[in-house]
Structure formats: C-alpha cells, structure tokens
Length: 255
Image 1 (cartoon, rainbow, N blue to C red):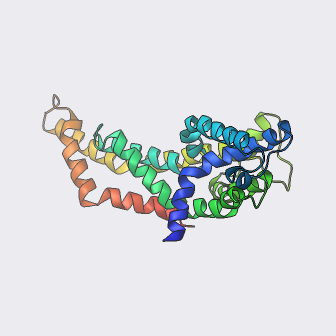
Image 2 (image 1 turned 90 degrees about the horizontal axis):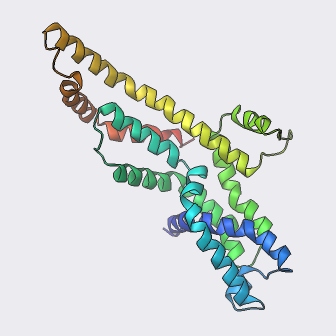
Image 3 (image 1 turned 135 degrees about the vertical axis):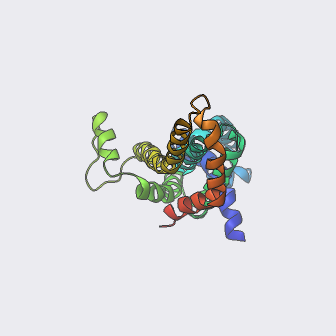
C-alpha cells in the first residue's frame, strides 16, 4: 500500500519537482550557492529566499505540466487509440471527450506506477531530504523515464531528429532528454495510428456490407451509416470491445 501511495504522489509531484531541480543548478550558481531543500524547509540559512524561489518555479511550471506529462508517459498513445475506436464506431460524442481523457489518465497512472515509484524513491525523496545534489537528483529522477521511453522509441527516430538539427548523437552516449522525449512522442503517435488502422478494418467491412445490401434492394436514398451504426455498436458490445482493447494496450506495456 505504501509503495502504491508513493507512486501516486510521485505522479502528481514528479514533473513539478523535476523542473525545479533543472532550474536549481543555474539558480545555485547565480545566487552563489543555495542550501539543500531539506535545509530550506527547516529554516536554515537563506531558507526564506530559497523557498520563495522554489515555490515560484513550481507555480510557474504548473502551466507546463500537461505538456510535460504527455511527453514522457503513455497518455498520448492511449488517447489517440481510444479516439480511433470512437471514430470507427461512428458515434461522435459517446463516450464524451472528458470521459476518454479520464480513462486515459487513470490507465496512464496504472501503467506508469512503477516508473513514478522508482523516480520518487531514487531522486525526488532523497533530494527533498537534502541527501543528494540537484544534478544527482535530476539524473536519478529521469533515469526510470529514460528506460521507459527507450523501450518504446523506434530506433530510427533518434538519428533522424538529431541529424535534422545537425546535432548527431555520440555513439556510446545516451541521447539528451529532450531528444529522447521528442522521439518517444513521435513513436507513440506512429504506434497509435498503426493500431487505429487495425481497429478500423472490421467496422469498414460492416459499412461495406450494409452499403452493398442497401444498393441491392434499391434503398439508395438511405444513408448506409444510419443502418450500419446499430450493427457496429452491437458487434462491439458482443465482443466486449472496450475491455479487449484496453487489455491489448496494457499487454503492450507489460514487457
């Protein structure tokens, strides 16, 4: 139970504190050296100014949290696949956008819980207790995310992006976090569209069969989508489509 709680705490605080860590190195140099967060929170020397700076950075980063969360998690992949499912069914507002986003977010927390837990335990928690410096905390926090993204990134995506900017990745060294996260997002979008194509095929067959039947009986004025919609929904319900698709998506991240 404690492990799960730590994972969900990390899910909400991880990106905020990671941004503060990245800012902390430059702030420390400019200010002549700030004490560790543990000392700041305990009211040590320079505690007030240090705490104000960190709180200011965290509040500023609130507007960036949705974008950062989509860059390093499976949320884009899930929301695109579920959007394809709804489009293939032909129902534009069922389920609504808010429900699809909520489902994708909860599945993201479920899939990413080990990554959040590892990042919190290795980087965030030691840093808040003043046990490690900013650079060490950044590397320890982003390490689990690097491992997760590397496993899902297409090998050809990183060289293409690095060559496009004229900044080739040195062989034997890991790519920068910004390059890896960009390649990861593009790879996730590609994988989501591949799955969306497969999802569309059975519903396309139903549309073609219904259109052929209506044409054969001379009902050319009846829109085929109106007739095929109940068949597609019935087929999807009988196959327990939402559960099967969710199960397939989860198995894709189980490796």
